[in-house]
Image (cartoon, rainbow, N blue to C red; front, side, top):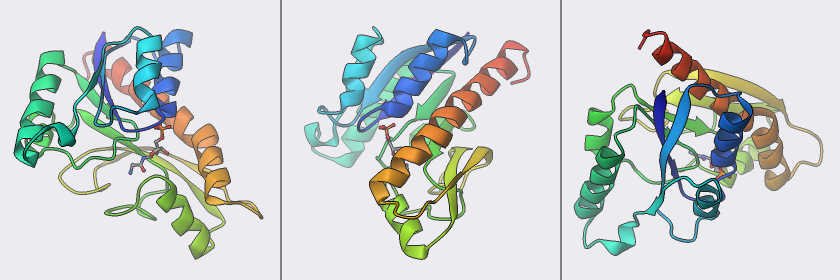
Length: 201
Ligand code: GAR
């Protein structure tokens, strides 16, 4: 059984897609050991509680320094002992130690076709604003492994989504979520869980 921890910052629709995927069998051999948010007001925490998954808030605001936050965050992760860490709309720069400890075992969902509209400063709606400003006709989402860079790790899955006339950033964001993110993030977790179950990782 693959034990995952999901890190979130906001609404948690990708977390919901994971919980639903485990519920309906799209994701097999997987359990959510915990959900961690950096933001006490994140609706994602309510989704975790509704699914009876242990939910925690570790906010940088509660610590005197970034180092102290990083230490507390890594300690919480260690206590949950995940096989895989899933960044599902987690908008925090990761503690460097976290990448070392769980190298090759952290994945992220990004709302564009990497290498377009990714890297520092590209997150959430900003990604879709940039795609619309550039006038691309196709965008999408990417699930990738996390390394020291920003959105530079090995790509696992990508899915393209059409940009349509009259799209606003909000409308495009929703279409990318529905057609791509909520599909490829559960699919990536399932693929990793199946590989783990067969002893391939
Ligand atoms: C999602 O669109 C996710 O791809 C994006 O934040 C949103 C979170 O939504 N992540 C990034 O931009 C990471 N660079 P959610 O909280 O409803 O899942």
